[in-house]
Amino acid sequence: MKKTNFILGITALSTMPALGQTASSRPNIVYILMDDLGFGDIGCYGQEKIETPHIDQLRQEGMRFTQHYTGSPVSAPARCVLMTGMHSGHAQIRYNNEMAYRGATNDHDSMFVHKELEGQYPLKANTMTIGRMMQNAGYTTGCFGKWGLGFPDSEGTPNKQGFNQFYGYNCQRQAHTYYPAFLYKNEERVYLKNKVINPHLARLGKDEDPYDPQNYKRFEQEEYANDLIFDELMSFVDENKQKPFFLMWTTPLPHVSLQAPERWVQHYIKKFGDEEPYTGKAGYGICRYPHATYAAMISYFDEQVGKLIQKLKAENLYDNTLIIFTSDNGPTFNGGSDSPWFNSGGWFKSEYGWGKCFLHEGGIRVPAVMVWKDKIKPGSETDHICCFQDVMPTLAEIISVTCPPTDGISFLPTLLGNKAGQKEHEYLYWEYPDPKIGNKAIRMGKWKGIITNIRQGNTEMQLYDLDADLREEHDVAAQHPDIVAKFRQLMEESSTPDPNRVGL
Image (cartoon, helix red, strand yellow):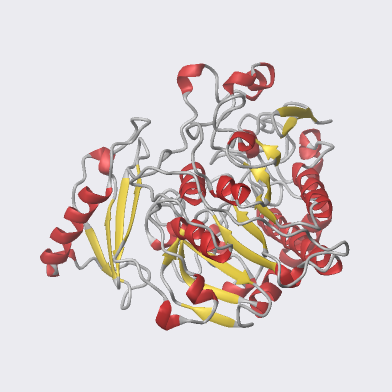
């Protein structure tokens, strides 16, 4: 594994003018990361049922990426790749592991009492994260939403990994409900007006009619976490509008459980009509109107994106801000979600085995829209192949600092329309050591190799020609043994031992 180092030779930042930033100052960076949003879940990527006008407007004002990849098909390792610039074969964290040896890590009541039960494996102390890189360069840094890279009081908390401010969920399991009993402001718990309700145990009684909305009322709560997160985020912008800032908005939306503000749910009930309730058979919380609620979660967030853009424009910040919008992995298959009904996978399959938790295109190719006034051509599109590990070197080049060692390649030339100057990856590699599944994948040009079900003893590689078979329906491994052999070798060369011993 490559070692990171601190950045040297940072140039001093000039003082911002009293009335805001100028186009000549270093740009603000706003990185918006949705959770389990599929490639086809927003309008500018083909969604026909869910309304996303503000994100679609960003696409009109910026660039749409058609071959942008996450670092992993699930939350924590994807964020680790993004934060460190190291792909999943080199990453510190490669799996959503909650370290069950600590005790009842799945029990919301226990976690409420015992802080030490929260959270996931921590990033190592002094890891050169993207936040620390920006911080060292003179940026004020903030992260708002879901963390999942270090339990409370560990070395992996946001404030110890390069972020001046944090507000949201430390533990991604707590993010399975949008009505948590607490959130975190920096290192401290902030208790909310919500009761402790474990969404995985919230069920209707045997005699309760699942079609009666009144039977769901007892599970309603007062404070919707994403309202609070958004308020803190907007305050961060307000407090730092006279100096360059790096804002990561890592919303849990639309990850299940299905919970959304009532006004948006009612909007989609009117649009979709009545539907079959979700009663908890596939885990997570129950929901009377699952289709309406899933759509509501996305449109609600789109509305917040619109408010943030409005704020940036009102404060004369928009013209000097690079906005990156994307998702941490493909669409989910559980909790009452219905990815096939929404065509959440877009160009790709999205049913179980093809979306989240898997390394098929539907699990790792994600929507990405980037806007930077007068730098990125409005309404443009690129098929440049890039991944989460490329974000750190891209930002380093933008702010003119030396990038720490990463597995990434800056895609700034692509953003600026300089296709001839854009370097390309020889190949991209992913591994996901899920204890029940186990996946490895590699992409080189048009070729995609996948080994899945490794934990069940499978060693056979599937091979797909993405130019001819974007949905990965025709395995051509038998026709190309030379490519399969090369990919096996590259897979071995690309993977170092998993530091948390859950590797493949």
